[in-house]
Length: 227
Image (cartoon, rainbow, N blue to C red):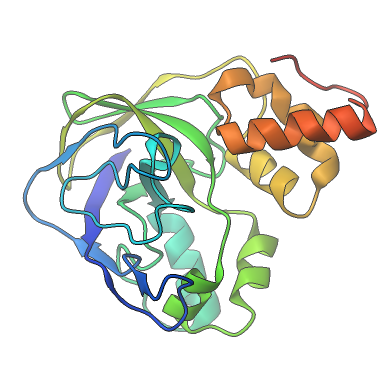
């Protein structure tokens, strides 16, 4: 398992973004990149030095400090869309190979390079900016249906990384809440929300609030976890 590329982007004008600009257009960098906790959402941006985020209300912050996407999933989309997709094409900071990003558990920890440790928090919910960036009709619906959204991660231990670094899973929690399950719970299968509570405080805080509100309104059903 390794890191194929580390991708950063600069803020550019966009007719598709709610704030009129976006940093989604990312590409690989050759030099080492320092990754740190950017601070709370709303004020903190990307965890990667040199990576710019325009809409701090919806993107960036400690629980979305880094976005990873598997090269294998990009390859699958290349075949479906019939066009090449470079590393960083989905706005991901890390393009990986050999890592089961979709099957990663919420709270799973990855060591990348010598120092950096990241923790999986959630899947990426597609938005209009993403659709406009790719220029594909019905993109939000298609991406959601595939349920392979890539993973947001928080920074546990900061460190420098670069393309070619090894990715090692150093901790796997004792629950079954994967990136795919948490994504489906937030999008097309809301009845899964009680089950994601098994991931506890490792959940993205916004999903944790959603799940607790759902249980308060509808009940836990069968198999709900405890926070």
